[in-house]
Structure formats: C-alpha cells, structure tokens
Image (cartoon, rainbow, N blue to C red; front, side, top):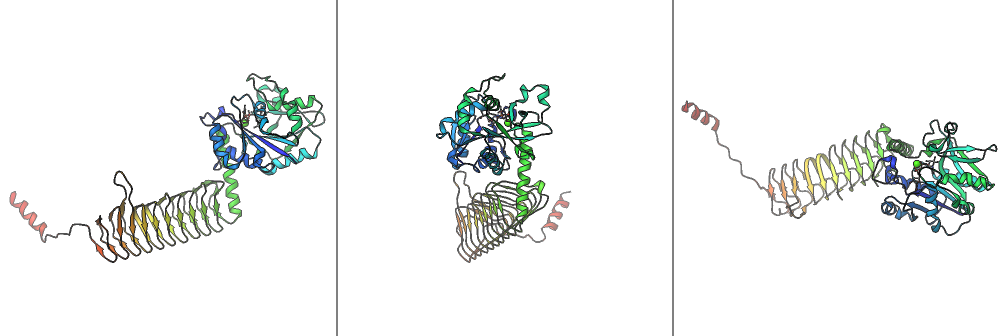
Length: 463
Ligand code: UD1
Ligand code: CA
C-alpha cells in the first residue's frame, strides 16, 4: 500500500495563550508533534511523511530533523485545507493513499492509524475518516451521516445549527484519502466561513458532491483522539501518557509506589525489580538498572544508574553515571559528567560536579567535590570543600587511592593529594601532599591552664 502522510503543525494554537507553537508544548516528556510523527511511522517511512510547519517552523523542523521526515512551509495559516495544499509539491507520486493527521492529537497510536489505512484499502470509498462519539463534543467538527451511513459532511462547531450541535459523532482529524481524488478536488474548497479559512473538513461534502463515498471508521474508545487546544487538555494528555508509561514499566517488573505521583518520560528505561518511591521524576534519556531503589522525591535527568544502586530520598542526578551497588543520598546532588564508582557511598548534602569517584570511596556528609579525580577507597570527611574556582578559571583536584581527608578540609585547586596520605581535619591545603604523608594546614592548638580562674580574679579586683 503506497501511503504518504501529511501532518499539520503550522498553527500557533491561540487557545494555548502561549508564545510557543502548540505542537512544541510537551506531554509525557516529548513535544506533541513527536508523538504524532511516531504514530505516522506505522504506515509510512520518514521520507513519505511531510510535516507542515509555520509558527516557529525553525524550532519544529530542528526538533524533528533527526527523524528524517520532510517539511513543507505554510507561511500564512489559512486553514487545514490550505495546509495540506502546501505539502503537495513534496509528494511526487499521487497514486495510493494520503493520510492526514493533526499535530495536536498526541495520544493517537500507530495501530489506529494503520487500522484506518486498512479500512480504506479494503473499501471502494474515496476517503475514510476516524470518528468517535463524545459525551461532550464541544469544539469538535460534527460528522453528519447520510441515509446509507456514509459521511455526508463535517460541520465545524462554530458553523453548526442548534440541531447539528446535538450531534455527538465527531471528526478526529485523522483521514485516509485516495490520493488521486484528494488532489483532483482539493482546489474546490472555498473559504466559506467567517475566518476565511480553507477547511479540509469540506472535502467530505465535496467528494459526496462528485458521487464518491466517504466512510467513517468509528472508534468506540475515544481516549486516543483527544485533541489539545488548551493547557487543561494538555495536562490531561500528560496524565494519560504518564499513566501509560508507569503501567508499561510495572508490567515489565518494576515496582512503583503510588504510580499516580511519579513522572517518567517516554524514553526512560528501568530494569526489573527496581523500586520507585512516590514523587520521583525520571527524565530525558535516563536509564536505571535492575534491583535499584529510587528514593522519594528524587529527580534524575539523563542519568545512568547501573544495577543495585540505591538513592536516598530527594537525590538529584543529572548527566551523570552511578556504578553498581553505589548508594547516594538522601539530599545529594550529582551533576555534569560525574561518575560515582562501584559500591561508593555519597551521603546527605554532598554535591559532586564533573567528578570521578573511585570504587568504594565515601563522602558521607556536607561536601562539595568539583572537577576532581578521586581514587578508590578514599574517605572524604564531613565538610570537605574543593576550591575549584579562582574567580576566572576552574582547576582540578586529584586524590590518590586510599587517602583520608579529615573533616572540614579546604582543598585549594590545582592540587594533588598522594595515595594513602592523610589530611588533618580543618586543614587548608594549597600544596601537593606526597603519598603516605600526613598534611596539616592549620594553626597548632594552644591551651592556657587555669585561664578561667585567672580571668575571674582579674574582674573581681576591678570592682
Ligand atoms: C479541527 C477540525 C475539526 C476536528 C478537530 C479534531 C478543521 C477545520 N477542523 O478543528 O473538525 O474535530 O480538528 O481535533 O480541520 N493547522 C495548520 N495550518 C492551519 C490551520 C491548522 O497547520 O492553517 C494545524 C494546527 O497546527 C493543528 C491542526 O492543524 O495542529 C488542527 O488545527 P486546529 O486549529 O487545532 O483545528 P480544530 O479547531 O481543533
Ligand atoms: Ca485542535
């Protein structure tokens, strides 16, 4: 079946009350238009999919470029019929089928798109239109049937008579046309509406007028066809996509406590027997291994967790990797290309930035480790700070395997601390520490015996 797809994505989406084009708004961790392109892939290769762009065309095209789809510009948004016309020159062969999808119906599945295409292929109709019946059809085009059950016309909500407004059978905006008949007659659409737009929906009446049949493909379950016009619908679609994702993960062996509270993006992968506590967010290209535990309220963005990693509550991991068996958190922040080694332990209020922490090393409380290369079995005492920034440049700190950094140490970079060395608590370290040495960078303590009694005597004499 030679099928091409045109996806309409040029409109601003006035009802979103946004400066951003509607199809760029996100739901389920992806832009709306990305979901629709994925559904279209069920019936056509990328080079047979044309996305019609207009508002923020550059952004939409840049976002979709990696998928390999084609683009056609609609400079002025003169309606859905006009938008399809704009795609015409990108579609060389005019036999077979032409499907039209709208960029604002992101719940649509590939299976449904294929089913509509097959219904069209099996019939002698000129076009197949996906319809559904809604309890509240407000805003949708109403589908008017003829006495044979075929589609006679589509009437937009604004143009509908009171009797037509009672019709609950609606146009989903998903069509499969015989390409030859669509291109032959599309020029007959006229701007017969107050907005002076060319409505693609007029094709139903036009094809009927030429003696062709238009059939409906009715979906009893309307949930896939929700079109987004406002942010209220956007939130509803996001909720549905999140629920689909958590369900898919639970069925694949992931435990999710209170799934309605977690946010997991479409591309995220999670291994079996991992437990996800409430209010967790797993975003971007995050990958979580098997038998992990993600503590309540943790946020992972493009993070890679190996197997058996545990994150305490409220841990943030971004663009970083955590190796098998490591424990991080609660209240820790791991970011920018950090790697936490196998079995390492990061505790509360510890921040790691661009740091490699070796196997089994520990930083359990209140530390900042930035631009550091830390070996295996290192112990970083509470309150240790790498001073990696001199006001102009960032500098590296290197700590050899087995080193022990006493509490409240200040490590002024660039700095090297040798293997198995000790840094005394409270030190300010500005010079290299040789392997196996003890470095003390602080004032020696002075004790003054009986100082309190001497002080009291002094004050009583003054009185
Ligand atoms: C449209 C249908 C309506 C249907 C509903 C389903 C028409 C005239 N009406 O109404 O029958 O029930 O979808 O959700 O088709 N677009 C362009 N260029 C334009 C105009 C629109 O690319 O000039 C794009 C928009 O970006 C959007 C899609 O087409 O992605 C639909 O446009 P929208 O204005 O949302 O149509 P509705 O009023 O929802
Ligand atoms: Ca719409």
